Length: 151
Picture 1 (cartoon, one colour):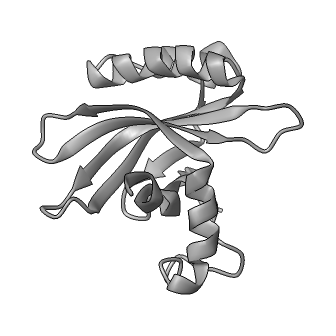
Picture 2 (cartoon, helix red, strand yellow):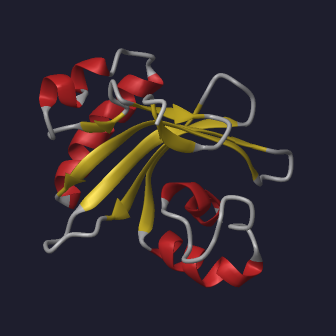
């Protein structure tokens, strides 16, 4: 259920959907499928009540079997529904076992409040973190990665 609720944010918009209507039932087929391609690798309680650090893997579009990873923080409301969602990092496409290894290390650093910038593309190319970069940040209001460029 949690992965299904997260599917609105961890994948692209459903075909013909917009940010305002992506929650409409007519798109359930798309987000159900997106959720089926994801797995939760780690979940750890954050300091704020009802908040959790997460590490999620999703199938990547690739000729060979690859996964992409997403690490972040989510908050649940009193009934257990997703109330807030924030991505701290996204990792590059990689073999599933490599994602588990590297993603787990990054997840541990995130949970412990350690600096992740050493794993950004500026220093590690495409080995670890794809986002954020100097040109992209996670916009908490829209729950999407945004460019720092004014265009």
